[in-house]
Image 1: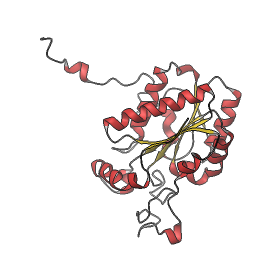
Image 2: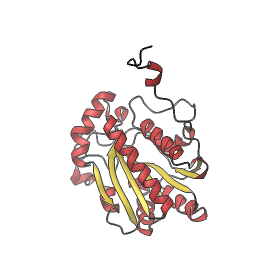
Image 3: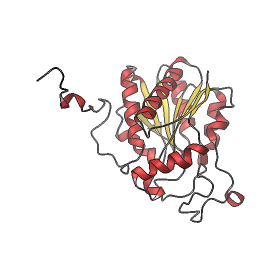
Image 4: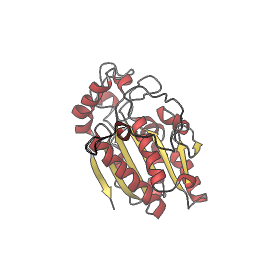
Length: 252
């Protein structure tokens, strides 16, 4: 074989060792799988396989423990930050992170989310924001956009009835206990690269005791949105990004 010819075998990306062989339950095109892969890669690259404790709540994120081979704790709906607080305080040398959706983090878990951040707990939070309740039937979430249709607002979100979309990370960025708030996505190769960089930064902050870090990943839910995976990406760029612009909200 000529030195100028690339061996196709070398072009095939190998699965991160930390990823289990379980078949994923996520819908085709879902952003969760990409974020799982990034987390697995980062933990191995940081050499923290035996020093990681993750917390999974309820929602589409609940089965994360099936796919990433670290120690997991299951939390009640919305209570992941409270559970992570206890885990980290009892195990200060461990990497402790929560993996949460918008319905979990910004609805039933609003109090736990805000107070853990306000206390400056040395944990990282991976926040998947697809603007809808994915697992339970596509209901309106706190992050659902104005005029966006869901199972519980079929004519679109009415701000006079339902209030405004909750930009929870903008609120968290104001708290002194928070050292990093960043909003990213995984819809392109460049976006995946940036998201991986910021998740690693969040994990490093947690290990260095800098306070809480939050990485929001603006994501798609093609099943809930009733769109194809490709159309969902386009819809996200056209509609979600203007409401939830990507970039760092706080990085100290």
